[in-house]
Length: 342
Ligand code: ZN
Image 1 (spheres, rainbow, N blue to C red):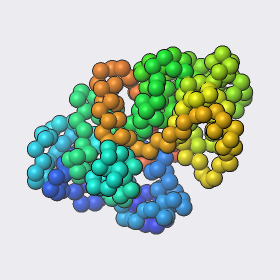
Image 2: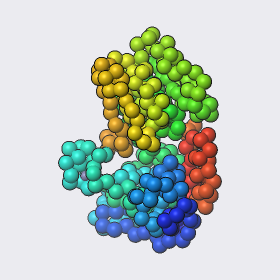
Image 3: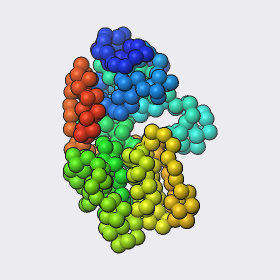
Image 4: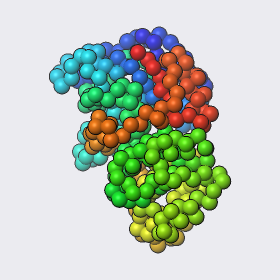
């Protein structure tokens, strides 16, 4: 089968022919229709310090996908060939403390498809049946982005949203999803900031009441003015940029909740006393998707039409054009970039 492979310990990705996987015991073989391209794939392609420490080539890359059940391994009875499905790409151990207390998203033994084992930028992928989710009428184009959208669902829905004011800091694809999710979940006012006008336009399209260009406008003053001087109830920090993290702390109301998803490149200095402790705020680190609470919530939001994430998909490429897909992400102007595989 055709696949996109990290072939060597050097920059670049290769389109090559590799053996088609088989569904082992407890596994489902899926014919991939659509796949989402992510910043993680860019790190692997560019062979940065993180990739050098984590990736063992040769490896089929890609972890966001949806497709059609092609075969069932021994013991799998809950799926049928032909069903449209997506899958959680974090494969967890099932027996550590986190896994056995309903916190599989922080399993310390997590192995990620396209990172620690073969991934989804391929015509076929074999997945543990436990990780597979039926799409229930959701198109595979949307199913393919339920992994990153799930991070946004996790970030937004683990806060108290109905009737709240919400500030989304950073309008990359996950930030734009978060805007739409906050609106769909009943936020009273959604404010979004970014430094890129194209991304702000996308946030507006997804339902942001107010957008702030952080390169030009005074972010903190604007958010305070929009909330009667109080600050917002919930901040979702999606950028990881140090200046934006300080804006998150400056715009959260006393006793509010800051959801941290954006990854800073290094250490960030924080004034714990004034930015966190004296404000009585709660910080929450968002990693992955709650298994499987987030997936069930997300599937209902999507299959019922409460949320249409399609405006966030701005680029579509065939599998062989992976370099163009990565270039679109690198430009900083793209929303979600997907591969059309079958
Ligand atoms: Zn575990």
